[in-house]
Image 1: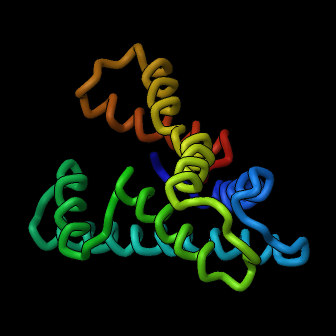
Image 2: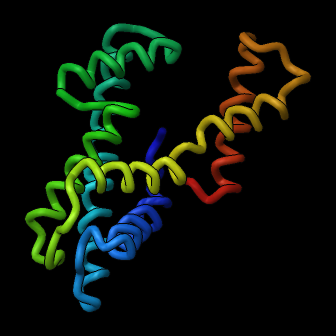
Length: 172
Protein backbone atom coordinates (compact mmCIF):
# COMPACT_ATOMS: atom_id res chain seq x y z
CA UNK A 1 0.00 0.00 0.00
CA UNK A 2 1.17 3.48 -0.79
CA UNK A 3 -0.02 6.77 0.62
CA UNK A 4 -0.71 9.52 -1.92
CA UNK A 5 -1.14 13.17 -0.87
CA UNK A 6 -4.42 13.61 -2.74
CA UNK A 7 -6.19 10.79 -0.84
CA UNK A 8 -5.22 12.05 2.62
CA UNK A 9 -8.33 14.28 3.12
CA UNK A 10 -10.59 11.50 1.85
CA UNK A 11 -9.05 8.89 4.13
CA UNK A 12 -9.17 11.13 7.21
CA UNK A 13 -12.81 12.07 6.52
CA UNK A 14 -13.84 8.44 6.02
CA UNK A 15 -11.97 7.22 9.11
CA UNK A 16 -13.67 9.75 11.39
CA UNK A 17 -17.05 9.13 9.75
CA UNK A 18 -16.72 5.34 10.05
CA UNK A 19 -15.62 5.41 13.68
CA UNK A 20 -18.43 7.83 14.54
CA UNK A 21 -21.12 5.89 12.69
CA UNK A 22 -20.02 2.64 14.35
CA UNK A 23 -20.12 4.40 17.75
CA UNK A 24 -16.41 3.74 18.35
CA UNK A 25 -15.78 7.41 19.08
CA UNK A 26 -17.83 10.49 19.85
CA UNK A 27 -16.93 13.81 18.27
CA UNK A 28 -18.91 17.03 18.60
CA UNK A 29 -20.30 18.20 15.28
CA UNK A 30 -18.28 21.42 15.51
CA UNK A 31 -15.04 19.48 16.00
CA UNK A 32 -15.34 16.87 13.23
CA UNK A 33 -13.35 18.96 10.78
CA UNK A 34 -10.57 19.49 13.35
CA UNK A 35 -10.41 15.77 14.08
CA UNK A 36 -10.12 15.05 10.34
CA UNK A 37 -7.35 17.64 10.00
CA UNK A 38 -5.44 16.03 12.87
CA UNK A 39 -5.55 12.61 11.17
CA UNK A 40 -4.50 14.23 7.91
CA UNK A 41 -1.54 15.87 9.67
CA UNK A 42 -0.34 12.44 10.83
CA UNK A 43 -0.42 11.13 7.27
CA UNK A 44 1.26 14.26 5.87
CA UNK A 45 4.05 13.95 8.43
CA UNK A 46 4.61 10.37 7.27
CA UNK A 47 4.94 11.62 3.68
CA UNK A 48 7.35 14.34 4.80
CA UNK A 49 9.54 11.78 6.53
CA UNK A 50 9.39 9.52 3.47
CA UNK A 51 10.54 12.39 1.26
CA UNK A 52 13.48 12.99 3.59
CA UNK A 53 14.43 9.32 3.22
CA UNK A 54 14.07 9.62 -0.57
CA UNK A 55 16.31 12.68 -0.60
CA UNK A 56 18.93 10.93 1.52
CA UNK A 57 18.70 7.96 -0.85
CA UNK A 58 19.29 10.15 -3.91
CA UNK A 59 22.29 11.74 -2.20
CA UNK A 60 23.70 8.34 -1.21
CA UNK A 61 23.28 7.03 -4.77
CA UNK A 62 25.18 10.05 -6.07
CA UNK A 63 27.95 9.74 -3.45
CA UNK A 64 28.39 6.02 -4.10
CA UNK A 65 28.20 6.39 -7.85
CA UNK A 66 25.27 3.97 -8.17
CA UNK A 67 22.65 4.23 -10.89
CA UNK A 68 18.93 4.56 -10.19
CA UNK A 69 18.39 0.78 -10.35
CA UNK A 70 19.71 0.47 -6.78
CA UNK A 71 17.26 3.06 -5.43
CA UNK A 72 15.03 0.57 -3.58
CA UNK A 73 17.96 -1.20 -1.94
CA UNK A 74 19.62 2.03 -0.80
CA UNK A 75 16.27 3.46 0.31
CA UNK A 76 15.75 0.46 2.57
CA UNK A 77 19.18 1.11 4.10
CA UNK A 78 18.43 4.80 4.61
CA UNK A 79 15.05 3.99 6.16
CA UNK A 80 16.61 1.47 8.54
CA UNK A 81 19.26 3.96 9.64
CA UNK A 82 16.57 6.57 10.36
CA UNK A 83 14.15 4.13 11.97
CA UNK A 84 11.58 4.95 9.28
CA UNK A 85 9.08 2.21 8.54
CA UNK A 86 8.11 1.77 4.90
CA UNK A 87 5.31 0.01 3.06
CA UNK A 88 2.80 -1.92 5.13
CA UNK A 89 4.86 -1.42 8.30
CA UNK A 90 4.71 2.32 7.69
CA UNK A 91 0.94 2.21 7.29
CA UNK A 92 0.67 0.23 10.55
CA UNK A 93 2.78 2.90 12.24
CA UNK A 94 0.50 5.64 10.88
CA UNK A 95 -2.56 3.73 12.17
CA UNK A 96 -0.94 3.40 15.61
CA UNK A 97 -0.32 7.15 15.66
CA UNK A 98 -3.96 7.75 14.70
CA UNK A 99 -5.13 5.55 17.57
CA UNK A 100 -2.89 7.43 20.00
CA UNK A 101 -4.28 10.70 18.70
CA UNK A 102 -7.86 9.56 19.20
CA UNK A 103 -7.13 8.83 22.85
CA UNK A 104 -5.51 12.18 23.67
CA UNK A 105 -7.21 14.59 21.29
CA UNK A 106 -9.31 17.47 22.52
CA UNK A 107 -11.36 17.07 19.35
CA UNK A 108 -12.56 13.59 20.33
CA UNK A 109 -15.02 13.61 23.22
CA UNK A 110 -14.97 9.91 24.03
CA UNK A 111 -13.46 6.65 22.78
CA UNK A 112 -15.68 3.63 23.34
CA UNK A 113 -13.97 0.80 21.46
CA UNK A 114 -10.76 -1.13 21.96
CA UNK A 115 -7.68 -0.31 19.88
CA UNK A 116 -7.81 -3.57 17.92
CA UNK A 117 -11.41 -2.93 16.85
CA UNK A 118 -10.66 0.59 15.65
CA UNK A 119 -7.35 -0.53 14.08
CA UNK A 120 -9.22 -2.97 11.82
CA UNK A 121 -11.72 -0.31 10.74
CA UNK A 122 -9.02 2.28 10.03
CA UNK A 123 -7.04 -0.32 8.10
CA UNK A 124 -10.10 -1.18 5.97
CA UNK A 125 -10.60 2.46 5.03
CA UNK A 126 -6.93 2.94 4.25
CA UNK A 127 -6.71 -0.29 2.25
CA UNK A 128 -9.63 0.83 0.08
CA UNK A 129 -7.81 4.03 -0.88
CA UNK A 130 -4.16 2.99 -0.76
CA UNK A 131 -4.20 -0.42 -2.38
CA UNK A 132 -4.21 1.01 -5.90
CA UNK A 133 -0.60 0.21 -6.84
CA UNK A 134 -1.44 -3.34 -7.94
CA UNK A 135 -4.26 -2.08 -10.16
CA UNK A 136 -2.01 0.58 -11.66
CA UNK A 137 0.75 -1.97 -12.25
CA UNK A 138 -1.63 -4.36 -14.04
CA UNK A 139 -3.07 -1.58 -16.18
CA UNK A 140 0.38 -0.24 -17.11
CA UNK A 141 1.66 -3.71 -18.03
CA UNK A 142 -1.41 -4.39 -20.14
CA UNK A 143 -0.80 -1.15 -22.06
CA UNK A 144 2.83 -2.15 -22.69
CA UNK A 145 2.35 -5.67 -24.03
CA UNK A 146 4.14 -4.64 -27.20
CA UNK A 147 7.41 -4.16 -25.26
CA UNK A 148 9.54 -6.88 -23.72
CA UNK A 149 9.78 -6.72 -19.93
CA UNK A 150 13.24 -6.15 -18.52
CA UNK A 151 14.43 -3.95 -21.37
CA UNK A 152 15.35 -0.33 -20.77
CA UNK A 153 12.64 0.73 -23.24
CA UNK A 154 10.06 -1.15 -21.18
CA UNK A 155 11.25 0.41 -17.91
CA UNK A 156 11.14 3.93 -19.32
CA UNK A 157 7.69 3.47 -20.84
CA UNK A 158 6.45 1.70 -17.71
CA UNK A 159 7.38 4.66 -15.50
CA UNK A 160 5.72 7.11 -17.91
CA UNK A 161 2.58 4.98 -18.13
CA UNK A 162 2.32 4.57 -14.35
CA UNK A 163 2.62 8.34 -13.93
CA UNK A 164 -0.07 8.93 -16.57
CA UNK A 165 -2.44 6.49 -14.86
CA UNK A 166 -1.81 8.08 -11.45
CA UNK A 167 -2.53 11.53 -12.89
CA UNK A 168 -5.70 10.27 -14.57
CA UNK A 169 -6.87 8.85 -11.24
CA UNK A 170 -6.03 12.07 -9.41
CA UNK A 171 -3.33 10.51 -7.24
CA UNK A 172 -0.60 13.01 -8.14
